[in-house]
Image 1: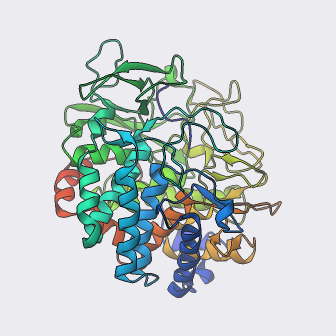
Image 2: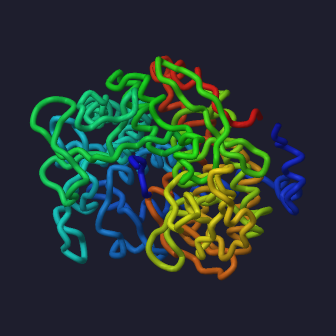
Length: 522
C-alpha cells in the first residue's frame, strides 16, 4: 500500500437531531460568548508554547503551561498553526493589529533564516523551538534525527503562509517570499519513471530526505525538480479523504502540479473480491475527469453512503476545509461528504457505541503516548486482525473491531460489536462545528462539564469517556485546529477568506467543483 499510515436517501436536520436524547434542548443554548471564551483559553496555551525570541511554538505542553515544560521541538505544521491562530486571535480581539503583526513578523523572520532544503524551499520536520535550529538529535534521548521534508507538514505551513500574506499587511511580503520559493512539484511523482510507477495522473510522495536517511527499502534516489538527487519515499498519498490533499491544492493553485493529480487518488479502493481486504464492499460507478477514470465508490454506514478516509477521523475529512470552502465550491462531492461524515461520527458516539459523547481524531492517548482515533467503519486502512479485513482507526481504548464483511467475498465477523472506553478528542468536535454548529457546541459543553476535560489552556487533548482518564496536555496542531474552526464559525470564515482569494478560487474551484462523489445526497 502507498497510503499514509499515521498521524483520515439520508435524513438530516430535525429528524436526525431528535434521534439523540438531549441534543435538541442543548442546541438551543448555543452561546457564542462561551465559544469565544474557549478560544481565549486555547490561545493562552499557544502563547505558553511559544518562546518570544523565536515565535516558534513547541509541539506540545502539559497542563502546567510552564515554559520549562515545553516539548523541546516543533515542526512546520506547528509553526503554520501558530500563524493562522494569531490571525484568529486578532479577529477575536485578543490581540491588537500591531501585536498580531509583531507576532507574525517575528515567527516569519525566524522561519526565513532557518535551515531548509534550498532547491525546493521545503522545511525539515523537526526544529528546536527555542533557537530555530534544525534537530540532528532528539531532545532527551539523543537519538539521531535525519532531516526529512514532509509533503503534508510543508503543506500546512504553505497554507498558513498564504493566510498570513493575505490577512496581515505588515508581514505580507515576508510570507509571500517564503511561500514563493516552495516547490510543490518536488513532491510530485508524475509516474514517468518505469522503476517507480504510480496511478495515472501522478501521486504525492510522503516526502524526501535531502541528505541521508534511516529507511532502508523505503526510499530511492531521484529528483522531480532537477539538481542533486534526494531520497524520495516509495510511499505516496493515494486517498482523497485525507488531510494530505492540502498539498495537492497548493501544487494545483501554483500551477506546479496538474489538476489531473487530484483525480489520481482513490475515493475508495475497488469493489472486486481481489480487494476484499479493505473495510467493506463499496458501491459506486466510474466517472472520468481531466482524462482520469475515477471509481466514485462509497461505504454504507447507518443508511448513509459516505466516501471514507484512510482511518475515518475528523482530521482527515475536515482539516483542509478550514482553508478551502470545499462544500461551497464542490457541492456534489465535499458538500455531501462533510455533513455526512460529521453526522456519522455523531451517530457512532451517541447511538451505536453509546458513549454519550462524540468526535474522534488522532490525539494524545489518555493512557499515555499518542494514538490515532476515528470511526472504524469510515476507514480503509489495513487491518490488524487476520481474516477480519481492514480497520479504520478505533474509537475506544479496547480497539473494538467493526466488520460487516465484504459482500460475498468475505464474511462478516463483527457487524454489531460492543464498544468499550471511547476516547473523544475535542478538536474533532470543533472541526465539526463548521457543519453542525449547535450539535457540536452541545457536545463540547458536555465534555467540559461532565467529563471535566478542561484546563487553563482550553480543552485537554483527549478524554476516555467511561474511565474518565484525561490526556492532560495541549498539542499545538490540535489547538490550532480549534482556533481555525472557531475563526471560521465566529469571524465570518476568516481563515477561508484569507486563503481562498479570487486567484485561488479560479485555480481550484473548477477542479474540485466538477466532481460528483458516490456519497448520499443531502
